[in-house]
Image (cartoon, rainbow, N blue to C red; front, side, top):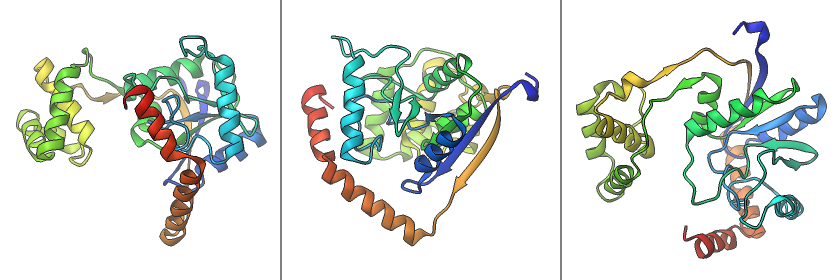
Length: 258
């Protein structure tokens, strides 16, 4: 794809509570664009407060009103569902139920499908989750093969009970090149890499690559002094607790066994 034919993608990056979503909304309001959430938790429906979809009681009420108005009797939302906050369309929010499987490969596929059908208005990718952003920006190529959920659960249980060391060592003994790009402290990534190796007999490192970029990308990073950032994080936690974050978790556990 020629560079001049690619759509523009503005990526807004920053730490938790740095103000990236607020900045993206201001830019979207000014230039008539929309926001694509790059948050691995905001894709889940009913996880509203703890994931930071909303910051105020008014926004929470509005989100629930929009969602409830469109849900069918089976709690499904239409494919063209879009959440509007402060008048700005937000995509890739509320797309799956809390007990449904979702991952970076599905996210990339969904974002590409969505953007392909959208207008040339500015796209603001806001996050959040580094892997989700990189997968979209760099067009990651994902290993083929069906997930082995039973093995994945077994490996995650091993990590939970024994620590990551033994699973990591097994992965590196079978595919040493993984040490270059799979972070040892990313427990889920370690488990999924070993799952792939054991399930397919192939090297996970050999299946990893990047395709042709789909966008012309501009990255905007937000950086705050550590002390200021920590104060903002503390204030955010307090605000979410007052908004009902604990009750939200209890409701998810009671209604969906999470």
